[in-house]
Length: 245
Image (cartoon, rainbow, N blue to C red):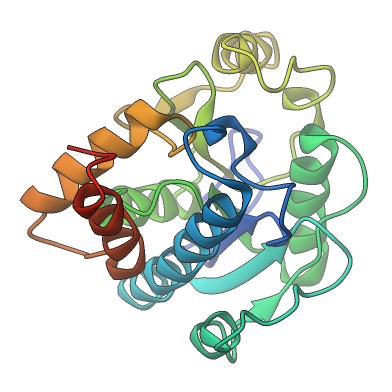
């Protein structure tokens, strides 16, 4: 069945599930967790998050019949991790470099690039939420394929962990105060002004602050679904050292 957009145009039948990630370089990743973590630990955690998120990407793409895409915040792939785990876990996944500019310009560019390539709708999520329930990502893919104008996963810090759309929507991203607690509210206001109905997923969190690590540790002891093993191992080391409860 072919969905139709709100304007009456034929909709899409496929979804590109896109994982956004920063290139893992020491001193540029997980800086909000410092000084609780050292720069080396911040890099190790970031690598763990990417590896687990790539596994989550593969799982959900297979379940949802989506096209998995890995998109780094640079015009190149990152250097392999010392033991090549990142290279191995992401082998065979399509790469789509992010465009230059702020986060809004990059998101808008990704939606436009995918639409120009093969008309696919897109769901974009970040690598900082490996404890995210896979079912929510599946729901987001189903929603954009069905023609839902905007799907957003609200983050508990006022931003969002996921955004999806069947069509490019640059007005949603231009001039947003990125990195603040006003991101979600301003995005929803932009959607209303554009006449777009936003479908909201349940709130979730990114691993950006020490308290987020505590939260993730509790979630990982209770999970019955996807297990982000590399992140769990990193957190267990902090627990063993008495730095996390």
